Length: 207
Image 1 (cartoon, helix red, strand yellow):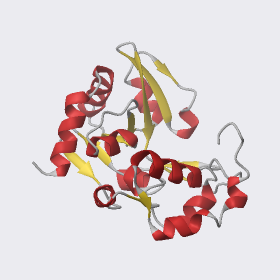
Image 2: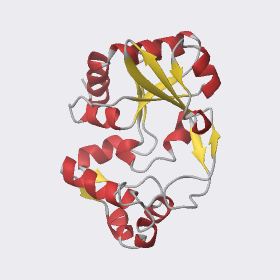
Image 3: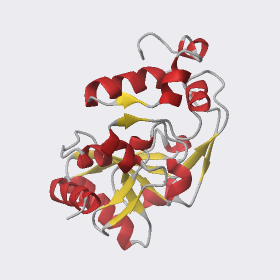
């Protein structure tokens, strides 16, 4: 069994009932849905993540219409919170982001139909993977699996650009490296100290 099959197996065997229900409902409606973020990364490390985030090609209103109990507070940014099996599951439409004017959040979002465009906006390659254990499908356009194997934290795209968008990302890079026992790749490490003016914009409670 290769690493991708093993990770999909970890996800499939540990998929919470509420997450499985939401994914199955979306797929039965002819829509696309993936697990993204930390849960996918942790599956390659043989760990079960505490949080499960889902991304879909469905628009927020379409997602909301498929479930009887939802919270629509984040709908403007593409996120619908679904109350299923007495648990909460967040589903976010594939999206791209406008300019980061405050060093923390994008000024606007645009919805996409392709998962690759959604992954392109994420911070690090190890967080820019998507998995569908129900369909045995895996998407890794930025070689996140390779970086996990090499135990490296590397920005998606240009590190200076990523750190300039969101001032919290330098701190996240250091935290991931410390918690996972990874190192920072050269470009990422070099960019860390060059966007401190953006880092200073971040509220202290977020830091």
